[in-house]
Structures are given as structure tokens and as C-alpha cells.
Length: 191
Image (tube, rainbow, N blue to C red; front, side):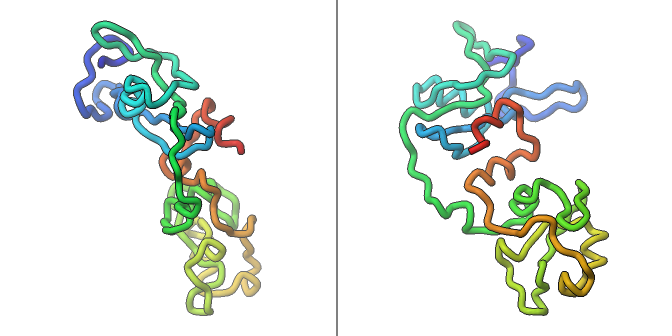
């Protein structure tokens, strides 16, 4: 395969900041189950292999195409598997990670509402006051808000989360994989 500009893409190529280019293998593709349920995010290379092996079909393509010696393939943005893959319903709830909390809270501080690069995780009810490390007690917080709240209860400092924390939707892995959602994915993630 070659890049959209016609030059060969080296196997396993990474972004090349010297030339301001990105290789085909770095872009992300949304993978839908046969039932149109989002189940994964993969590389363009992996998506192309699934399409070429006729295990998936392209629902949304990008502007460029992928070129081989004897054929061209639309560059996939969204693919759908042709056969249904069973996904455990509680797969998203098994492990709480910082990145999953940030994605659930849309990369925004839940106390002041600003988007920050330096987010931290805050226990709404501090662990020292009996709060647990569960989805319904952890929120994304910017460092200044986290320091201001400290080891106190929300009512003591009049700092309440903007949204009540809860377990994330099953599509949380998509937001964990990529903080910015391409417009072509939105209609498939809306449900």
C-alpha cells in the first residue's frame, strides 16, 4: 500500500514531524458490529485488511484512497463487520482508568467546567471520609479545583460536580481511543 500522495508507506510507519506528514497506519477507523453497534477503533491498515478479506464493509470513506499496484480502495473511516461479534455487556465497567474517567466527563473539569490539558481524578466523597473508587464517586477535575476541594466533602466547600457521576456508556472505549471524534463517526455513536 502507498500513501494518498502516491509515495510508499513504510511498514509500521509513525508520524514524521520533520515533514509534517502522517503515514496511513496511524489514522483511526471506527469499527461497528454487524448490528451497527460501535465495538472498537482500529488503524486504517487493520480496517483495509478486514475489508480485503471480506470480513467487513466500508460504510464511510475518507477523502483519499489507498492505492496498491493493481487496485485502489477507498480509505475507510467507518467499517461494519459482516458477522456479529458477541461483546460482554459489562466490558466497559470492569476497570476504571484515568483516561476512561476523562473521556466519560468529556475531558472537562466537573467543578468549574473548563477544558484543561492537566486533568486529575477526584473522589467526590474522599476515600478518607468513606468514599469508594467507583464510577459513581470519581470525576475529572482540573488541578486547581482538586486542590481547592482537597480532602473535604462537596457541601463543606460548596463544590458539587456539574453532572452526577455514573458508569459510562458502552461506547466509552471510542472516546478513550481518541479524544476528538471525527464528524463521520457521530451518527454511529449517537445512540
